[in-house]
Length: 302
Image (cartoon, rainbow, N blue to C red):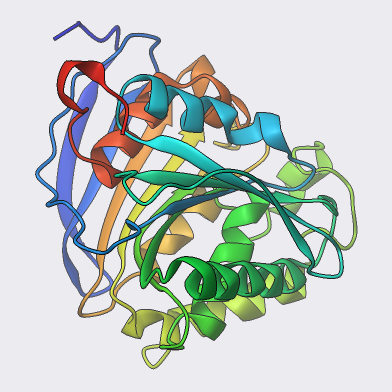
């Protein structure tokens, strides 16, 4: 196992909002690889459970290519489809998905990638998952989302996730989730792009309050959640765009009786907002460990 260049790594277990065994990690970002193990059993369905990758505001192919391609290169998963979703909800697919693929990865591209209303994007995800259920018969899915993409995915889960006619979520990886607006002082320093519709304070606060309610439909879902966020150690404690406080708001969301919540707090230069998904090997390692099994034998890709 290669050594990690790190300032510190420590793990604390605590109770969060009534959920036992919530795992909080604080990790210094480094550029070296970690060898990981996992014991998840193989899927028994014809088309295996896919993982969809959802980019953030203004994002595109380059936003999550690193995580998708490196997990394939290391033998954990296989890139299959890319789904281009138009502003009207029409979806164009490229690539191929073969039934024998063990851990299929599907990249989602919103053609209107600066749509400020993530409620609309959540409906696009509903169309996508409906089509994947109809064509491939999938019953479950995993999701990886970054930045504004987290808002779309979580809103989708809260409003459509319990629909048994749609694939059911199994595992969720949120990276740099902006669940609450930044404090005014931080916002005035330009940490968020100034777009009055992008993260409307009223919309975000109202949605978060709904998610946190004890009777929230979101809390009824069976979800294993991994929340990863960065901290550049600025006075505001942000990754340059999303505050630590905003990301940690999910501690109070995934507290259902059948939910597990894990948290990784990253420090160092590679914990910058875009670096988290474009070059941070710790994010890659944790994602591989959480979502997939060990690499296939002799490095053969699934």
